[in-house]
Each structure stands twice: as C-alpha cells, then as structure tokens.
Image 1 (cartoon, rainbow, N blue to C red):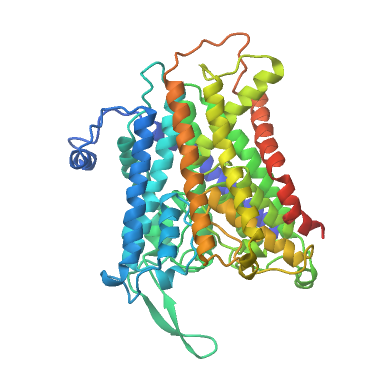
Image 2 (cartoon, rainbow, N blue to C red):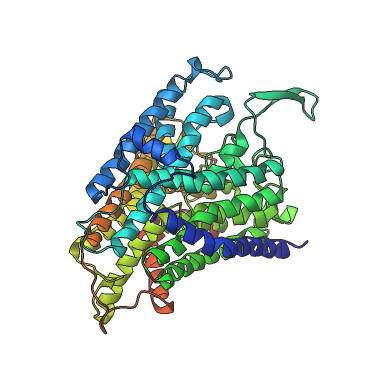
Length: 566
C-alpha cells in the first residue's frame, strides 16, 4: 500500500464515521442540555441523588456571575484535591511503592489536569500511582471536559435566549449531565473497542521480561484502557505511559489509532450541529463546521507534504522522514494524529513532534496558534470559534457599513470588548512566556537543541520553547520533547499560562453570554450581515487566519520558518 493511498484511506474512514454520527450525536447533545428535569422513575436516579447531596436545585438558573463563580470554585476545589492527592500518594493504598510527588510537579500537574491541558513534565509510570491516576487524573479528565462543554452551551444560550434577566443556565446541571449522559457512556464504548485491540487494563505495577539483549527489564502496566478512552474523548491527552499513544499498550494497532483519532474529533465536531440546533438555524452550525474543516484540511495537507518527502541527509539516505514515527502507523497515521491533536486541545501524541521536519513541526505549531479552533477542544473549540465569529461580524460590518448583529443580537462595545479580550489572552501568554524564557541564563541548559545564534540547532531550540508556551497557553499539552521542563521556572510559568489560558477566555465567554441573554432579539433587516453560508464562512476563515498571521508571523519567522529555509 502506497503512502498516498494509506493517507487517503485513513482520512476517508475518519470523515465517513464523523459524517455518520454528526446528526444523531449533535441532536442528542442538544437534548441533553435542554431537557427539563433530571433522571427519574424508570431511569437511573443518579442525577437526582447528586443534586440532593450537593443541595443543588436543578431548576434554578444562574446569571453569568453565578455560572462563572461556580466554574472557578469547582475548578479550585479540584486543583486542591489533586495537589494533595499527589503529595500524599506514598501513604495511600495502591501506591506500588511510589513516594509522594514533589511540590513543583504536583502544582504543575494539578493545574494541568484541571485546565484540560494534561501537560506532563514527569514519567507517569514511575511518578503517579494507580490510585492517583484513577481517582485524581482520570476524574479530572471527565469533569474538565464537562466544564468546557458547559461553557460552550452557556454561550449558545446567550445567543438563543431573549430578556430572561441574563440567566444562562445552571453550571451544576450542565456539569452533571455532560459527565453522566455524554462522557461516561461514550467512554465506556470506546474503552471496550480499545480493549478488543489489545489496550491493557490492570492495577499491577508491571511485569518482568527478558529484553533482546538478554537482560531483565520491567514493563509497566496500568488502568490504561479506561483512561485512554476519556483521554481522547475529552480532548485531554495525558497518558498513563510516557510514550503516550505511541506505546503499544495505549495504541497497539492501526485500528486503535483510527479509533482514537475519531474519539478526539467526535464531540467537537458534533457540537457544531448542537449549536445550529439550539439557535434554531442549522446552517449556522454548518458554516462553523465548514470553517473548522477548511483550516484542518489545509494544515493536514501542508503537514503531509512536509513529512512525506525525504529532506535532510539522514532522511534522504533512508528514503523517508520516519524519524520519530511509529512503524505501526507510518507517516500518514502519525501526521493525521498530530494534526488532530494540535487542532484540538488534546495533546496526545503517537509520534515525536520534535522529530518532524521544520515545515511539518511549524504547521502543527501554527495549528495551536490559530487558537485550537479546528475543531478545537471539547467545548473550548466552539466557544473560541464563536468569539472569532463575533469579531468577524464586527469587521464585516465595518467593511460594508452594515449593522453588527449576530443571530439577532446587537454587538455593542461590551460584546466586542469581551470577544477581543478573549482572543488576545492566548497570544499575550505565548509571546510573553517565550520572550522571558529565552532571555533567562538558565534556559540554555534546558534545550535539547542549541548552538551559535542562527544555526539550525539554536533555531530549533527556540522553537521548542515557543511550542511549550503555545501548548500550555492553548491548554493542549503536547510538547517538542527536546525541552527539559523540570526546573521550577518552567513548572511555575507553564502552570500560570495553563491557568490563565483556560479561565480568562471562559470568563470573557460567560460575560458575553450574559450580555447577549439580556438582550431582546432584533429582527433581521436589509442592513443585517448574513452569518451563514459561503460568504460569511470566507470572512470567518480570513479573520481567523489574519489574527494568527499578524500576531505570530514574526516569532514563527525566528523559529520554524527560519529552520525550514536554512
């Protein structure tokens, strides 16, 4: 099978499955977040029990202030619990002889998993106990994804509702429904499929085997299948094993590789249908989906072209760019996975992004710098794209002199300010974090690649730093593996980027939702800019690309572009 045919076949399978489930899953998500009441009578009473224990009235609504306060309070409690759990895991059951995690790593990891980033600055199998993995990290995989979906739905309600006092839903209901009705059932199905392909599920620490050199070695085990499913479905990315989805116990076959790619894309893609359904115009959702698909396809084409050629002395001698790629998946499977994880906020990897060609590595880096909106993380991709859509409507109105309205809601100074601030958070964190880090004297020792200024090694080392802060600020979690981030500076600075990169856009999105929900709907007129169809899709695509290009072209020119032109 030729590489081109293999790539085309894998892409076709992914697109076909997503197209098959798009309508039923998207409509199901819409019903989950609009159904009145909770699970009763013949259904499970888990939700009712939770509401009673938490003293939550499932029929009460919150303004954006209340919703945001609930998000922040819940996330803070989760971070504190996860931090303490890591610190004391050495005295808890199922620790497999592992001591408590150091304060810096515990802080970074707690922030990472609560913010849906799943950045891992440690070797999981020698750092985290099975108890910490299951009751701490896996739980955050579920609830952090549910938080993202809840915020996206709250923003949709802002567009769909009219003059209801600014209420945008109930965070606790959205969190519960997202976890119990969506993430848990889907994760169960995906975990069963992965188990059938050979993904392991065990609470043993490992087993001893004889290596090819005749020496004994310990092979790590863990509850992989259960966490692998939500790791991908929730666009989390943190694996139980250090090699992540390149490890045969996490991703054993080409079939499991495709299943994991589909799992990553499933909910972010279906949420565009949910958006169209809830606002009463499904063409709106299709327009957003088309923009996401166009950007995704463009990055995939560039990355495939860059990785399929033999560039450089070593690649030319070998006849292919296979360095850092798993032979079970080859270049097409590795590129498709890389573009998918950087286009979402997943961070899982089945190949070494650090070993990609300069152009290929630059493309997946740019995929994050777009804001991870193609299709983006679970929930975060949709509300990120809607923020850009608000800006696109404003820019389009300025260009043609039409009224800045979106889905019947006027875009006044407050709405534009919230959208603009949300879009500016990530670039500010990436550029400031990279700039400060590269001028610190101690940074040079952390780089896997270095050299005299202007040399390929120095340029690639700069790209490693840029990639790290882009990953943290976008809540992605993948990395150019050549960078050592175990120092206190990296642990703290990347943790702060993850924290601000997650919650500042959430606050701005919820503030926008509250402002929109308090408005009466304005009937469309001859001066209203159409926000569905090819024309607006082109405007939204152009706005997205232009924002990223103007913001990041100078720093990309110092990194991957310079390395590619060398």
